Length: 309
Image 1 (cartoon, rainbow, N blue to C red):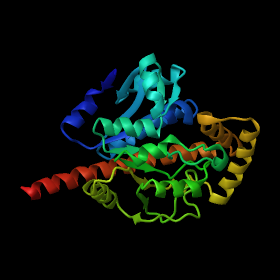
Image 2 (image 1 turned 90 degrees about the vertical axis):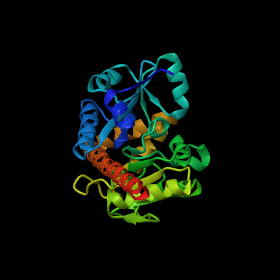
Image 3 (image 1 turned 60 degrees about the horizontal axis):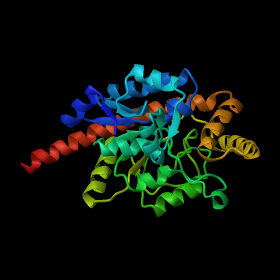
Image 4 (image 1 turned 30 degrees about the horizontal axis):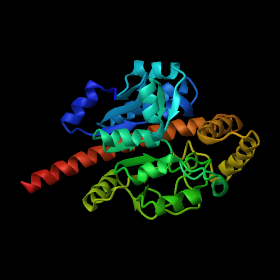
């Protein structure tokens, strides 16, 4: 496998410094230009400002890259990139493709090479109508078997949130609300669906991640961080927009991994760009919180090592 790890990321791994993985599917397929690159760089800046090292993950001309540079991110979006889930990685790497990594692919690569914390926008989940189509994101299976800490604004609002929560429970994926008791609905700060546990600080989230590791659990810890209220869209209003877009997309017979980008694009159009502003805000906020959790993990592990001596 062709693999490139940036010098900065390699040094942080070697010295066991706090690192935060960042996905690239949001850059290649989730946001339009030039907002996509602006947001990618802003997420990295938020991680650095909190004291951690960002590691943007992607595939460029058949090489898996951990720690894309600004130039490489620009090149990635120019290459007509594909959207890469975990199952797509073998072919993409073998055939020299370029692509943005989804939650599943990013979480796997991050954990594979020793990164413990990952920030994204919203995870994939159970799609509307999945009882007939079986359309369930590969993110959920990967998160069930990848012990990493994921910071997200819940699941994407275009999904069936109730069934997504049921699936997360079935797969044994621990959920925490960060200063919230309800599952965030991506662009909306909350939803009618309660979460099983709540934390108030990054230190508490880090402690839960350490307990997951001590218990030997294989699943990711999902920390649900709501979009900042000033940038969010009220849940009822958002669901009305989602219903409208869902009917349109169904009528156009869009299927598979093209459903999410198509729906997000249309939501941005009918909300006058409000979903784009919310998306950018939650991505940056999630990157910041992930960095704080990575720092707490570093501190708590350092303290336990000293106490053990």
